[in-house]
Image (cartoon, rainbow, N blue to C red; front, top):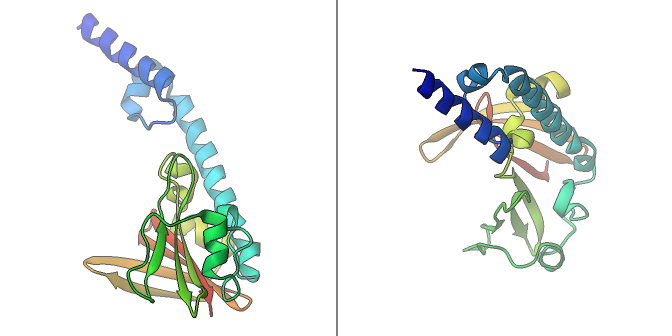
Length: 194
């Protein structure tokens, strides 16, 4: 039994050294006495997610998102502006109502952009794949409603077999919509004209 305990301890310590950002089951940390580190990471993740949430508030008033697409404006920026800023999409829209898709890579967030008459109609923000809990993966309905208050609207939508909740906030002439798969799983954020 002592041998098995040492294996658990060595495995847990190796996980801490090799992949400190990876979630490890709390029982593993209890075995190594590192449970307090889990709580600290969780608080840091929540603070980072809240910072991400708040970064959308002011730019939405003028039809923009923060980050890589900063400067692109709903209803004004053209597809040529988008291509100059982001390059060629990973997946080009298949029709005039479709979205050009930019996949998340190595800490860079993913986006989908739709156009109307060659001008940006909608931007979707999918967040990052790496350390997602520090980005939109850490934004819950409770955090959103607690920070931003009562939404302008909240509706249930169907996306194939997936049932989602769309919580929207009017920001000037624009609408910021948070699409949740569950109360703790934010799928993406949309920005479009009201």
